[in-house]
Amino acid sequence: MTEPAAPQSLRPWSPEWYALQKSTLGESTCRQLGFYIIPPELRLSVVIPVYNEEKTLRLLIDRVREVPIRKELILIDDCSQDRSRDVLKALEAEGGNDDFNRIRIFFHDVNQGKGAALKTGFAHVDGDIVIIQDADLEYNPSEYPRLLQPIVEGKADVVYGSRFLGDQAHRVLYFWHYLGNRFLTTLSNCFTNLNLSDMETCYKVFRRSVIDDITPKLVQNRFGFEPEITARIARRRLRVFETSVSYAGRTYAEGKKIGWRDGFKALWCIIRFGIAD
Image (cartoon, rainbow, N blue to C red):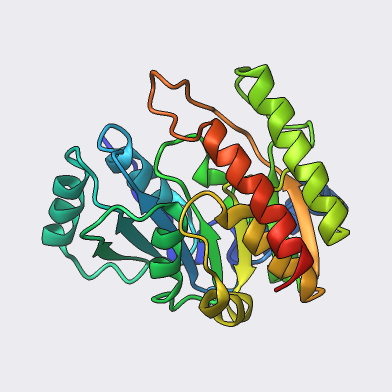
């Protein structure tokens, strides 16, 4: 038997919920725990590129829906060859009038890459804040409130969710991937003068105005998107924050897609976009 849903006024992160936590725990403890108010009128746009993720896609969408924040899920299928499209079409057919979790789906007729899927999604966002979410369950949607906090509180324009800040669990996998990631992040920092710890992270969060400004200029269609958008963010002198996130990485047998060619492409993009916009 499922438990009845909490009253709207007691939804986590609502003003009423925060007032209850503050009266019980005190303001200082709430700050330490990361409790704050997410305005009920705020809408989060969750942009989800999809390519051959039928095994995890439905579960991922369910987990995103469970996050107690008004949002729209924008899913872009990049010409999947498995049954991902069937899963998305089933979601589309289910329809519904759930304004708390709007779902919008777009299909590419030709595989173009993650960057191209994200550009399609960014062009259709309606929310106040935009977050990128992979469809493979390596990143945990329950961490959205922590990622949004610097933007909601007016401190940041962009937030990166770092796998390497140290206080969240992450699966231990490939040493050379880790080393390559750190090398690319360090080189990117040399060109951008940012001190990021994880430039290649999936979890990047933006004020809507940032996405509106940068999206028309994006040119990278594949994994070169990460260094490109980082360089464009740095050039605009936006306020960038990092917060730690957990990470449950996949092996190649489990469906991991990025490879050594993507690393060389990222290297070229760091230099190319580090030099000129």
